[in-house]
Amino acid sequence: MSGHHLVLGKLQDFLTGETFEDTHDERFRQEVARLLVEQKGFVAGEIEPRRKLLLKSGEERAVVGIDFVVKPLPFGKTCMIIRYGPGDLVSRQRPALGLSRLVEPYQVPCVVITNGKDAHVLSGTTGKVVAEGLDAIPSRSELVERTSEADFARIDPHRAEVESRIVLLYEITGTCECDDNLCGL
Image (cartoon, rainbow, N blue to C red; front, side, top):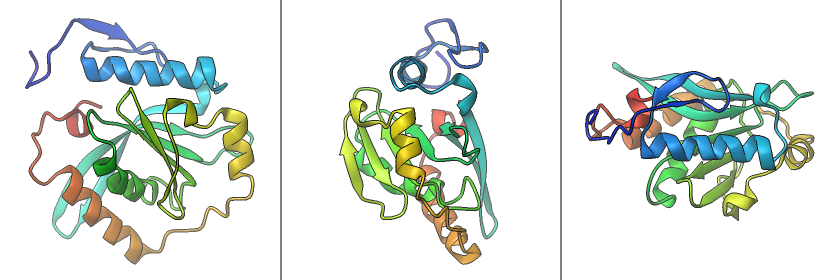
C-alpha cells in the first residue's frame, strides 16, 4: 500500500516509457492514453501526460495535475485537456473547466473528464457538456476540425484568480495529500 492506494507493482507508461506504480487509477489512465493513440488517431508526441500546474490564491499555493494536455499539430496550441478521476463525473466538471482556463494563457476549447469507464466532453467556452461516453472523446481529426475556428481567447488575470480559487476549493480543501490529482502525477 502507498497511502490509501493499493500498489500492484510497477508499470510502464504507454506514452513516455517511464516506470510508475501500478495502481487501479494508473491503469485507467493508461487505457485512456491507448485510446487516444490507437483509436482516436493522436500521435504520442501530441499528448503531454502529467502536466503539473501551480495554483495561487492569496497566500494559498498548490500543485494540481492535468492527466493529458493535447496539442495536435499543426496548431501547436493546447486544444484539449483530459482529467481522470474515479467515481462521479458531474462533480469533476467545474474544476476541470477551471483548469482549462489556467493551463494556458488562453481558453482551451475542449475539456474531457473521465473515470475510465465513462466520459463527459465539455465546451471550454460555455462549460456545457456537449457529448458523453468514451467514444465521444474527439478523434484527432474531429478535434482539429472543432478547434479550427476557436478564438483561443486570452484569459483575463482577474478571471484566472477566480478560477484558481475555484479549483483550489474543489481539489485541495479537505482532500488527502496522497490523492493522485495532487501528488501522484
